[in-house]
Amino acid sequence: MKKLSEEEIQEKLKQFDGWTYAKKAIHTSFQFESFKEAFTVMTRIAFEAEAQQHHPNWGNVYNQLEISLSTHDADGVTEKDFKMARAIEDIIEATN
Image 1 (spheres, rainbow, N blue to C red):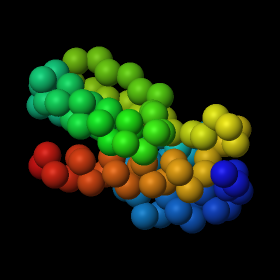
Image 2: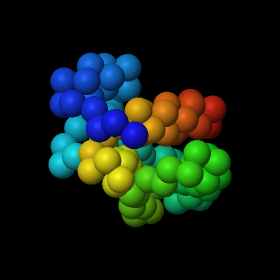
Image 3: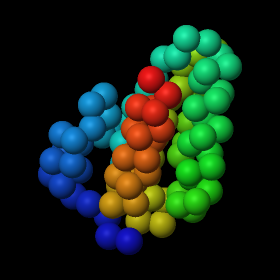
């Protein structure tokens, strides 16, 4: 998988509200009403990550979820990360 240039990444990020690029990864965070809601969304994302065989680096504290995506084999961000980011956005939209 081809690593994207910073210019390509910044252009693609225009399609994603709340996502940023730093340290060879794209990042976002979400806040939910409760821990249960955050964990439910994490579970849905986990199933999608398994289906895509592309797993996020993430953290959860109570109702906060922080997500970072990068393709380790490419040592940076690839199309694979943006495909997963789109799936995450679709899951978040479906829960609202």
